[in-house]
Length: 207
Ligand SMILES: [Zn+2]
Image (cartoon, rainbow, N blue to C red; front, side, top):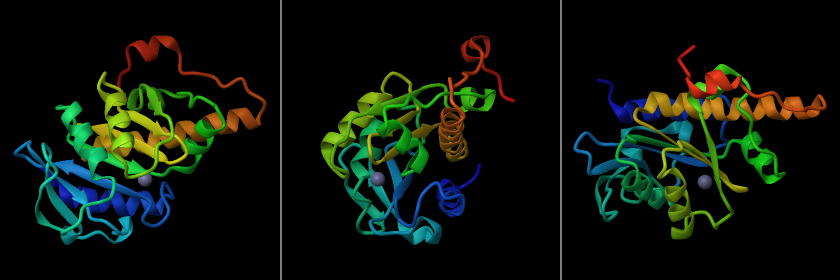
């Protein structure tokens, strides 16, 4: 089984390289095999320069830092409350993808145009703006995923994407921003924005 920390290090490099985030604008985590703790990127770390020492091992129930980086990300509560709300989630990617955030801020729903968008994203939730790093934001984002939604836009800030593996969370966030790009392009072309056929939305199978 792949090491989740090594996978997060790789995801950090890739999301910066593909401009899903600029510099240190985001944070990543994975639930540890014991289920009660998670590795979260440390405060001030750059996502394309992560190493094993960049991560704090944090207890999910109370936020106690057990080892590793002494100061977890300022958004650590977003990760902890989301893991508490979703016992099936083992990875959380919080980034600031520009088109997803822009479309939402302009009042446009991100449309799932292709079968890839539909399969990986399924549903796009949103929470209103709260100050980054606050308990209010963490609580709202956790509430938004409680029913099974895995991709949530945090208004005028970023996104929170969950999955049972780091790899799937990475594919989800890539497809979320790609769906935003397709929606944006369709709007520029005069719209309306096409959606993936309902038949596939109701019964998606991998491409
Ligand atoms: Zn953020």
